[in-house]
Length: 496
Image (cartoon, rainbow, N blue to C red; front, side, top):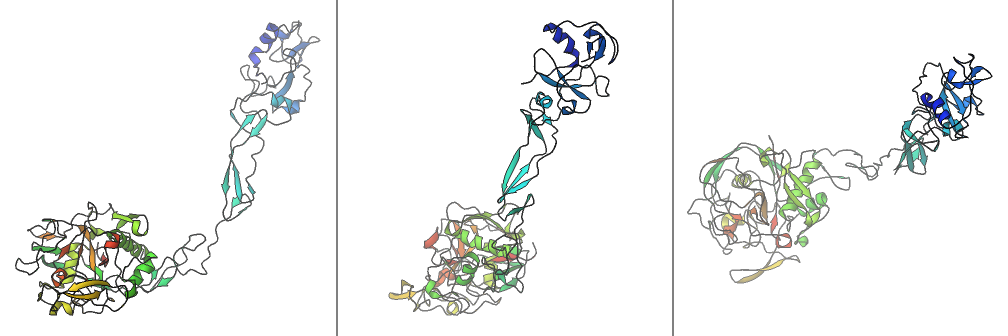
């Protein structure tokens, strides 16, 4: 490494090193002298005059106000020195400082020891493209063995590189109606007229009609003398009671007029988990977990540009969802979700207080048929099927093959809702909990359950009539393929 000298030590250091005898003298360049000490700075007394020494290297190799100097001890070292008397010159100014330019060829500049300090080089290299890689140079370099080194970073350009920049992706929306294009992920358009943007980028009609339900109040639960009350076999002791209590719902909401069909689930989720696939695409989707139902609601929200009500991770049967933590209750969320127990029962009753919206329970079993339930929903007494893929069951000692049926084949309640009793059970928002006796406003039970203890309502194709009552509550730890008779229908708060 070349030595860095300073103007204050030039004469002292040279004399200390035994660098010969000079005549004395004094003054600036051209003044008479007898010795080098009579001259200022790097000037030497030569032939009785203060002059710059003969360096043997060109002054133009150094920066402005510097000359190239060569000294006899140690022999052969070069350094750039400030010209004495120049505006920037002081006796304390180092011979080579951090602002010196470095090049690869000049000996004077090579002698400067920049000690890794940031320096100003002649020219920052231009960013350049190497195949599909963009090389970008930093604006501040460092001196290394007389050469300016500029750090750089390489960036892959997936869509090509030109002129020192990555080329932007060009969307290809020719085959996509809505949603992100397959190349860039940029939106290609949106669906109108109530259509839903499928995962394939096509606008499709969903087989869902949304019915508006006004806010109001009702008696939730059942009277103590209602047949079938508190008889569900999967009921943990005391956690699924039917204690009658007054409930007020302060928000209007919309609810699907029927259970979600297999066709709609397939369009939105890209798979069909149902057991009764032979029933056909218009039959209710079933064999879904609570988490799959919540994930479906999220897709609905996203397709409609609404904030989702659930936070989900994973895919398919492995998906896991929970209520988002930026809302205190589900009633506040503007997106689609599963109904609370209060919303579900309020909609099922449609202003009535009887066991079914069509009337009271006339037969708790499956035979003979319950006259009020038979016209309202599919249950063990009437869910016989002829298609392959049904399941075997027994009603009043008689073997039969039963299964789900297409939605909307039975009558509606007075608010226009199909299949609130029978066909498949329906997931609701909460886990199991005991009803209070006092009046409640916008009630909601716990949403975080130990295990798989979310509640489902409404009864299904393989149940006695008593399990299809409006007040019936169920929780049997259904999980995956043990959910053959459980589906769902979404809701959405209108005025959150």
